[in-house]
Image (cartoon, rainbow, N blue to C red; front, top):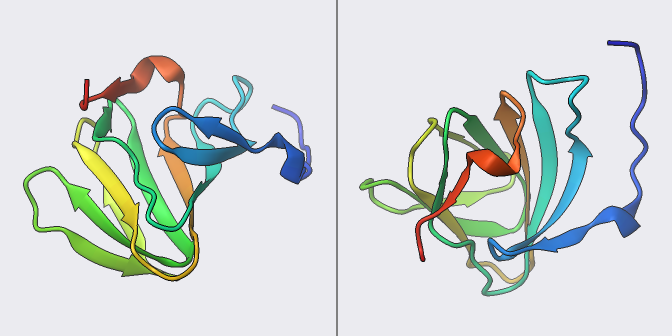
Length: 122
């Protein structure tokens, strides 16, 4: 791996079928141990029930308020500054419940790859 700076470009954001907008900040085969994505849920938006196989995910809430559901645990309210740790294989979803979009970083170890994603709503 060589030192580098990945530059932010707002135009790189895309809609992911999970139900949110994603901006891959760092997700590359040359850095396989971690990926970082910025996720944005519009007002009232939510992700589908899903889980990641062999990947631990962390949500770092940057803005807004959400309700996160993890497996069979009681849903929990989250807001800016909170960190949600999601073990590999744990069913999850999150919903925007505030008056502004919910924005959070999704930090995955090892890095997120499409094959690790399982949609549980189908």
